[in-house]
Length: 265
Image (tube, rainbow, N blue to C red; front, side, top):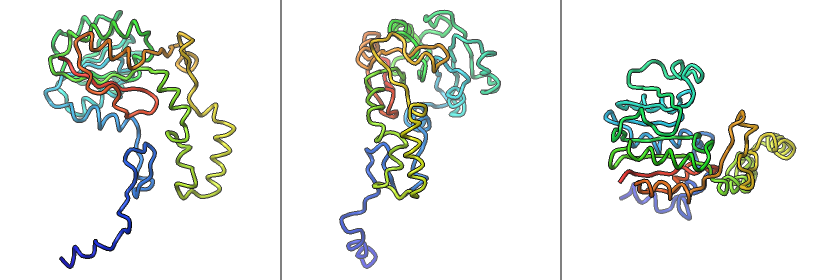
């Protein structure tokens, strides 16, 4: 009781570590209190669902960063589906030769080379945003027969409304927040240097604006590949129509883009 008594008078007003719902909130961890969005996605959307018995389907692996993550989580198998040849993406150079990984080059959206009723976990990030809504919906229809009952999926899409909200609230979601002197102790010369850089060079540092009035956006920044608005409402409707249950319309791990969590019924 003497030991516990000490806690009655410490931390007047209650101990406050930080605000858990603040995406850029500070904590007593200081500079060690921040982590990558991609790492957060791994912890929230991948690690809890991958076991040694999990068969994964990934659409658009690119060089294979996420594929490598599934393999390091000791999954049973990964089907990596892409339109580009692995020689072009250097997939095997990055991932390494692994008998659990099967790279499939496709010419359409049918997923014919993936066995029906074989997938326990689906993941795609940074891919469907470059496809038109009609192409996304065809892919979702093809996906339905590939996934087993109860299997999980995480799909990142483009939603211009969320994208624009992110830009409008840069002071809340970006590094600009970190240099707010009222909330953190930042060395004055560093603060002034950042404010100058942010004011005059933000167009080159920041995200480009997008618009629903244009069919393709950001094509110049993606080597000719457009960025197409699908939207959470339309995407979720396509998933439910194809036989999926929406677990979370947006996992909210990324301030710019939605990541939909769904389950095969």
